Length: 327
Image (cartoon, rainbow, N blue to C red; front, side):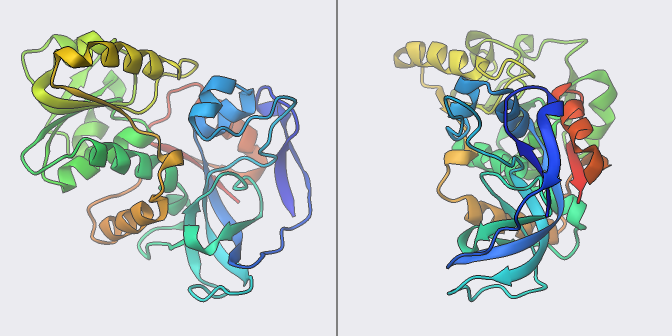
């Protein structure tokens, strides 16, 4: 099969397209023919070999080289074959999943316990945009204990996680304010945000409005400033940070925890790669998609031969929603 193999750390050019053996599904595993995958910071941080970041996102870097030979955490495709003991799937079933790696290939072997049936109202490309980003958004809102009537602020509302977070918060009955750049104001409003803050015109931490939950994806403001926008029992959920500065949320968390004895506000770091309920979250997301409450926002779809270009585009940090690769 064809796959992009990561043998050394570096820019997108280190991803080598070549022939590798097609994996054979072992007991309890399913061989999936990948129809589409997506690109996200999870992939390019590992590609670049940023050790502390990768440790936060699953601990998969080796001291002498990558432990993940084939990147790609999101997969959508068709069941090609099943291993011994698999009962829930059969060849031809359309599925999607969040995996540790392997999506940047024509085939990937996935544990039966990680697979979910693809929503019928999504194409493979749309389904590939869902797993890691949408599950992260769902985890963040679960950690924030969002309830109907809550006021939620999403900082970084136009990216992969943010576009899902805005829609999910609205589906759960919250009032949503999104923070984004000027070119994405209309997009974020169309996703359900009642108010949109253009960060080029206003600092969201200096407004008079207070929120029950701040979902901080962009990581552009220090913890003390973010605390100002929260109600006394509000929650600050940290998800990521701007390109090249994913360690910033750790600094935010440390700073916030240092003052936690003196405030009733909670600080949580949402890391879906360590969540034990990843499949359960995908099942919930699939149901919301089929109900029409959630729709993936896909910025661009690249052909498989141009996968390094897709990685480069995501690294630039300007994608609206998700960037997908059609395999």
